[in-house]
Length: 565
Image (cartoon, rainbow, N blue to C red):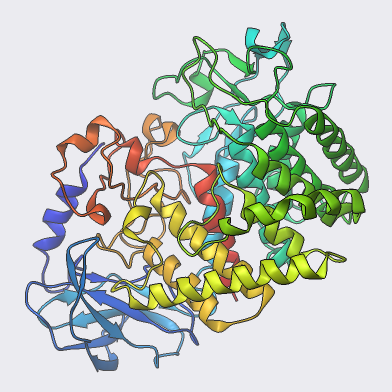
């Protein structure tokens, strides 16, 4: 089942005639009618002209000339651009480039990204824990039985005995659940709802809760919120994670016989400050978002956030390391001040209570440098989330809001300018090709769209779209990095259900980690020393390039929501 991307490259490079070639890179989902439409062409010899043809009858509908080649140091490619922006008629098309071949098919239309959004958001249903999952007749065979129905408190948690199941999402390719990573993941998804609810309100995800009067995106997010709430102790603090002591084999989730433990710091107060800070921020958002749909649940969330804040004030720097004998993901963080800033900002935005604004104003200046053009937020640095939510809140301090907006727009302008110069028109820099580089690209999109919410600028939206084009196929591999999206998606994620089931394709809607310039798993050792954008393997064993994770899918969902029409 496992094949190297190298095999795909050999097959693609031999293709001719009607067979698509990887030398022409397009967004395999498609393009919006009124948006710029650019494909990238990489060939051994420069090519001069191209045409766009209808997929159903091969009729030519557009022709043009390619740009001069531009060298991309990060991939080693010499890239020519095929600009067909003037083609705005909805339909199904492909590019024909004499001397290079034909591209994968793509759509032009206002709904070009609807399917990708549906699959990316519905992937969270596939990641559910404690419940039987079935993707239904649309994806026959994509199912698993209820899993991890028994749990227990680990000795490191300060408690003992059983822990009843409580939902949540499996974090990544493994079956652990982690509060810190759930924090930025769930927060990003809730922000997508807050900014784009008009587009998402009526979206149906075909999940068990569909039709209950709450939008499905909020129904799905609530499944993880319930688990996060279960990780709060009676004193208000929040345990760091719930995992087995080691990773299980590549088995279906219901076959994982390892004990699912609530794991703490190993010493009083047993909960961690970073996990608690992330919890406060996310649960505070839930306290305002769910109010129109379930006031009782919203009130419960707000009270839980207030209790956690009180604990955090007394325990601001309780750090987490894996206790002895625990080898699952650590999500360790050496400084929890950014989580506290985000927590205070979200509490202020939800409650308008000046006590949280005062905390924010006393601390935010030190974090202003985190709003940068070359370092979007990630699970270990959420300060920008705090800065942005404060700037978007009603009743916020005008001076602070003005400063944050100035920083954010300046950074967005720099990202736009850098992206426009890049041969692939993306925001990534050479240092961004790390474990989860595709999420970095998606998070640049989030940063640009948040700036657009502060001051509408079509350049910000287009630069965000360009990062989406990269993720959906306009990249050096001509590969869609979202499972089952596009004609040439990656197929072998480091994802236990995809590797353990009997389906020929992986579970749909999952974003690959992407190229990683650092050889951080044994599978990568077979790669020669290549430019960083080429350091990728479509292999299950390459967890450093091909794992999936909820915090990678979240900015993809946000990005798709922000550009959908």
